[in-house]
Length: 458
Image 1 (cartoon, one colour):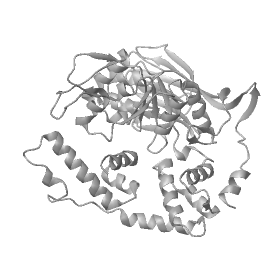
Image 2 (cartoon, rainbow, N blue to C red):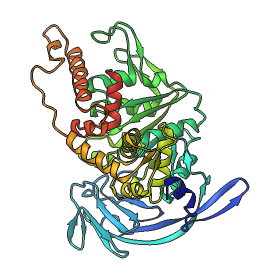
Image 3 (cartoon, rainbow, N blue to C red):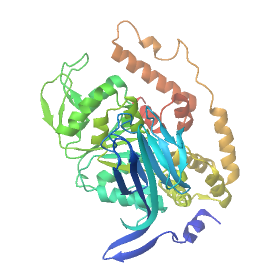
Image 4 (cartoon, rainbow, N blue to C red):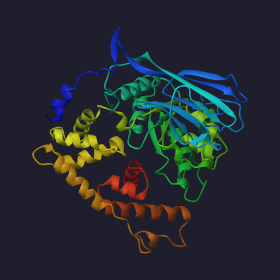
């Protein structure tokens, strides 16, 4: 059976019940009701009862349960509902999370269990309920596609928050489509006719990121021969997407916080503030809660960014989406006539996909380019995997590497750093060619960030 036949034969999900009111569809999705109650400690009697799949404990104002306990961290721990059960996970707290006297990092949690944080004992209770969630009934939102319950919940949330001006924090593993989600939020908002400016905090060097975000005045630093607007001014009446916000240097975070709070920006070298009318969408693959606890990310900035948190599921959590994703990727990548055999699809389903949809796309595009007879089969996929392992060899650098001769005493550190970055990126591209995944894995950056560097220095 080919992938086209497989897609047409997939029955509707048996875990959902759909009915229509007017033009809207409502989908009954399973929802978890979690109750946390403090039975002993400074906040005895405090409780929270929420309908969610994730509940957090900590002293910070963004948590669901906030005990007044000095030994509890701002983001201390969380309870997450999964298909396998409830998981209690420590969020890098200073004093630890305990169950039955044992300090844990992550443990399965039974209803009635007692969680100890600091001097506080919390009783955990839960129940699975069915609630109505507004859902458009579509299998796509912008360029995101999916028919699994996880993606339908995601689409429902994105559709609901898109028309607002709320600041959104998109969380998800590398390759889950965070930039596509941000683009879709912009396109479905009242700002759709305005600019959509992307700043990748991981791809821009620390010495350049402030200029990219806030702009500069003429003469602000060596080489600033004319004034330049930053991303917030360029995105007037539109949206700014701050990708990998967790990489933003700590010293710049107060300046970004002022932009979010006052909606005004100050260029480098200027004392004058300029009002800005933008919506801010941020994304990260990191756990910002852990970074807050470690002092690597400002707590007040986290709260301002996370007015709404939009989690994107990993490919492993999107059961049943693989056939649709495979077909969509091939069609959008210019291979509409290429099909995938049942054996190849089964092989793809066994892969853990740590790079998620981006990794799947790269594999499919390589396979579609090299396949014979208009079909991708399992043998071709196995051959590509073997070839990729051979390519994964270290880059060797020495004092004669291209670009080092440009770094002389006559150059300022900013120009010297830029020259070396350009030379290094060219060296990486020559070594790995089109295999962006392999290059990014070796260099230690995200494939998306590396692609932007390729475009910047081509």
